[in-house]
Each structure stands twice: as structure tokens, then as C-alpha cells.
Image 1 (cartoon, helix red, strand yellow):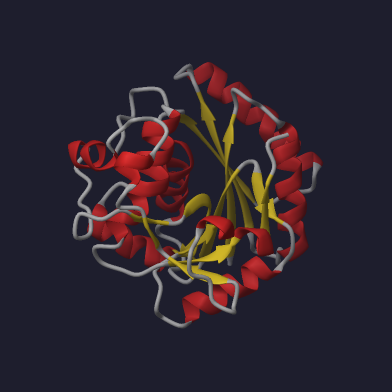
Image 2 (tube, rainbow, N blue to C red):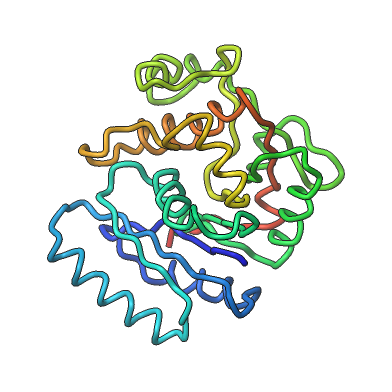
Length: 252
């Protein structure tokens, strides 16, 4: 079974992003597959959460999405927090179930992402499959795949003048040989079993403060896109698909 999840920001509320993913889901779905909508909102108002839940249940029903789960979360951690919430909700289902998880404005352009991700997991070499921007990756093999990326120089080259390593260590993130190893953050794919193994080793996937509103650079990039795989590298290998062969990132 596939659990097809997206992280959706209610503050932006671009429904077109949901519609695109619904079409992608329908193109590969089988009878028991589940569409999981993880909604991030800048409010802890439970009445508002309830109203949003009703609205989006109706939206998914209108698009004939019958097997569905909606998770509403205070917006503190972005995509990696959404991935963690989705994993925890389905944690006790069949360990062979797949989770694919996307940023809301990042979506497949063909069906090969699903087939090739499964094939990679079946090699037993990788704990999860991500995605890479090919032009930023120095080594690409003939199968349109790239391995994890070392960005040890990020502390001196990033545009935000933030110390990635310092912030990660302050949040209890253990780095592999003091290195940062990552995939780009639009897509994460693995099984319940593999995500369980990751959880056993690193605990919560996102180490940010759940009471503080999401900060793009710290929560999205450092603790999420970089911090999550950098911690995983202490225990497991991962790999990724080339973005331009499988996906598109579309902000509008």
C-alpha cells in the first residue's frame, strides 16, 4: 500500500498545489492507497482546525478521494515535521507500506519516480530515497541517480550567514564525522519499516521547538532539509533521484 502525503501550508492556501497532487496520486493509485494531507497552519485554534478539517474533507470528496487522512499541525517544522507526523500516524500499519512525501509545490511529472524509488529500496542499500537538483551535484551516474551530497563548506558559503553546524548541534543533532550530508527537500520516500528504523536511531525527525512558528532558514533548511538526512547518515545510507528527470518545483 502507498501512503501519498503532502505538506500543505494553509497560510498560502494555494489549492492548485493540492489539485496537482491529486492527479499524480490518481495516476498510480490502487484500491487501498491513501492520500494524506498534512496541513500546516499558523494557529493553535482548535475551532479553526475543525473548520479546516471539514472544508478539506469536502474538497477531497469532491475529487473522489475516498481513502484519505487529514492531519492538521501548528506550523513549526515544515516538510520534515509533516513527514514525521505522517509516519507516526501510520506507524502501526503494515511495515511494508510505502510513504511518499512531498512539499506542496513539488510534484511528479511522470510515474517513473514511484517505480524507480521502489527499485532502489529493494536493493537494500538505502534507507530512504530523496531528490537532487542535478546542476548542483558534481557526480551523477548513468541511471539518473545521485548519492548524498557533502556540504561541509555550507557554514561559510550560505547566503543567510548562519552556522548550520552550530545550530544543528544546539538542537541535539548528531552529525556524521562532523559533516553535513543531505538530499534536496522536495521528496522523501521509504517504507514504514525503514522510517521506524530511522526513528529508533534519531528520535523525532525535526528537532525544532513545536511551540514556535516555522522559520524558513532554521526550521525548513537547517533542521529539516539538511538536519534530517545529516543525522541519518550516522547509521544508514540514502540516495536520490535527479529532480529534472522526475519532478518539477512550481511556486505558482
